[in-house]
Amino acid sequence: MNLDDLAEQAAPHLATLVHPGDQDTPPFPLSIALFQPAVLPEGMAQEEAAELGLPSTDFGKLFLQAEFHMLREQFNVAFIDADELADLRAAAAVREPKRNEVKRFYTSCRDEPIFRVMVKGFDTDHPMIPCEAIKALQGRHECPHSGIAG
Image (cartoon, rainbow, N blue to C red; front, side, top):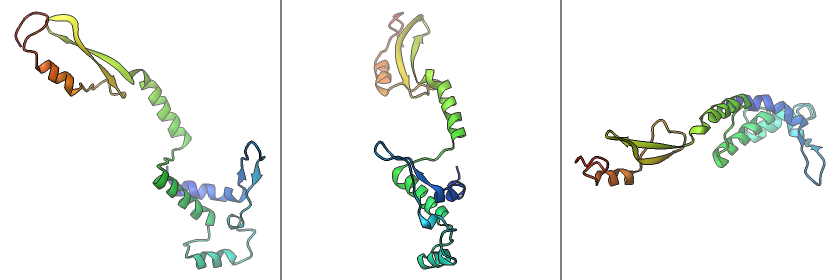
């Protein structure tokens, strides 16, 4: 998601921003003159921007760009639009049954599993066997089912 585009689209809405309220306070408008350029006296926006060394008089866009940057960098917030999020959730739902899966391993001489491993984290198509299991298997020198030395 392009945060500059989002800031540009959202900036005009700062002029009519409404706080949702809480259990003790009903919703109320946040009338901040800086975000309402039509309310500022003529030329004041340019003077303010010049005085503050800002690259433009679009205070709402500059504020949102700074806000989005702070949320992303300091609080590790990711911005994703609703359509992309819905696609990701649908893809995760398809893979959900494979989140954790037991894989059974067999020898060539018998149809019974010799051990099983719980594979976690959706990658059940490429299971990782814990090193401890490999070390235990390497310690065996014969097949437990047929008596054939390995």
